[in-house]
Length: 88
Image (cartoon, rainbow, N blue to C red):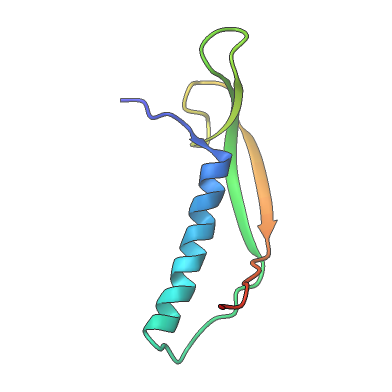
């Protein structure tokens, strides 16, 4: 069964969520050893996908290397620097 590609925005949300979860877990568990989060590099393979008809919406989907629908894949790399807002 073929899976629909994950949107790039959803993939970035997942990365943001996982970094946040790790930070919260360390705080809640009172971990002595913590890591400061520097630049996080995220590397995705993406494919430009048109929904349905020829004039359908164009999306950028995260796919496995080689592409999930046989099209050309492109490598996109993002350096992310987390910014943590102080808790109120």
